Length: 360
Image (tube, rainbow, N blue to C red; front, top):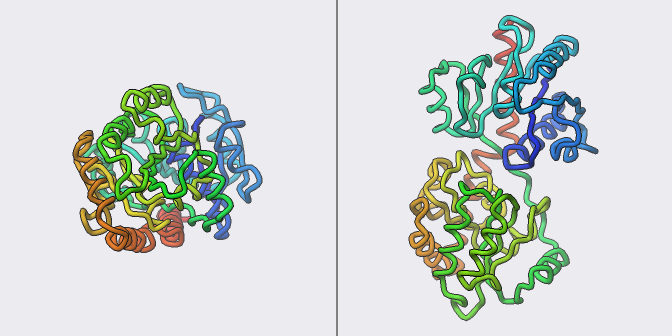
């Protein structure tokens, strides 16, 4: 059984990183998963040198009749059993015969517009229960909507030299306490709320300097840096840019925070748990599905900097044993429900089920 995975992204966000992880892991597990992406894209570069075979089409962000035609001919020529598309652009261009050999699965990681983009697929995968319920509410048949979560990369081992290099690069004092987050610098991520909350925290709780590290980049970078200056926290707020290998930053962090105004799942929460880091998050749909308040993390209202500051302060003051309790509970959750082996098994079971329904 062979699958083709189609994505038209020009950036490297959380969904794109999961695409790379999934197609590589499928190949390592012995399933031939071919990636169809845009030549020269961040995804194409990330897959270079991996076991994943790549094919390229323009996959333009409009009705690209050429790519749609080429894709359909490619699927027929190569004899793929499954074509799995990611996000609206690729899904809209993936048009397969309803009774052909290949089954079309549209994989969604967000509450996207369904009409005109997703309704023609043969089956749909959502990465949270809330998203799957919403897809059914949009009129998709419940029997063809499947829940399969994300998995995150295995945590990188702590490297004292790498940790020291990051401390030097950022100018972190040796005794600094670090709050960490990362993501694309867009409004929905709530980093402006986080800066307001951080400014309300003491500069040195317990006598140790408190620093904030926000990894990532995007259109709001200059605005966020200017906000940190206005709030008087620029010297303790760090913007290291996109982090291709965030392991050292997770290891340095005492607390991971997810301040998003909306998050379908929240890969950063899963990553933090994989590193056994306690998490404070806003009550976005994804965080509420992952976190049981005060059991495996702390939750606060969305877009409420004072409430976010209060929960961060609570965790800073809680002591190392309390932080470890939350972190261990989160780690157990990610191992149980979002482990690589479990997610791969669910995808392969789904592929086999859908292929059997086609009579192949």
